[in-house]
Image 1 (cartoon, helix red, strand yellow):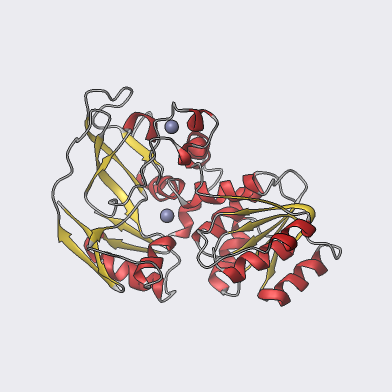
Image 2: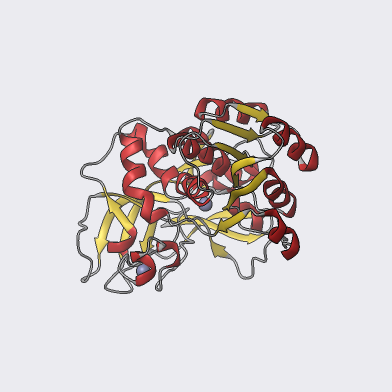
Length: 338
Ligand SMILES: [Zn+2]
Ligand SMILES: [Zn+2]
């Protein structure tokens, strides 16, 4: 089969790879329906994370079950499945507590920009649909495998509730999905921080009521103005830089919460500042598997359409251009079709 391999910063190639096989009786192999490039794939692509030896890329996927191991229950070849970027057995204590992305047997998916993918702990990781959905739903279902699930976690972790005010820091695919989540969870006011017009439009279409274009402390001052001088109930941090984290912390009111879902790079917090802020902090890799059944239902009923974050579709063999377009901010998110 063929798939994407990163060799060095800026160097992603489409290559022939070994066909994935069932290695453990709990594995499945799926044929990729659609996959995509993630904002987090840009960290190594931009040289902000070490790459080491050349290796496959990709962790977001929907597909058709091709083959299942002897211990896999509840899945059969031909089914359309959605899974998380983190695998989970869905039975251990952490899974039972709803934190499947901290499963005691977790593996992070990393080979999904390819024609076929091996899925560890398939029975716990994958959610099979009753029937093959219309292709129009595939982008939305694909978004559920990471960015929509992560946006939901940001809103959940930040305690968004009906009538509350939410601020979303970050206008990438996760930030835009976080706007959807805040709306679905009943936020009355949703302030999106974005300076890019196409992204502002999408944020408004997803439910943002206000747009703040200022950044850093100017952005914080603007949020204070909009929230009676005290800050927002919930802040959804969807970037992961020192600047975005500071912006998020300073935008929350005393007693409010920050949900941080951007993988932190170069972020360190001052204990005294956090202590005196009275702001709650919760983050981490999203427990996407917990949300999947609900999010799949919301997509299939047309209640939400997170697939709109894909503004570029390319054949999988042009994956390198998919990375370039996102790196140069010509695309919010690239959908790849095998
Ligand atoms: Zn991702
Ligand atoms: Zn588990």
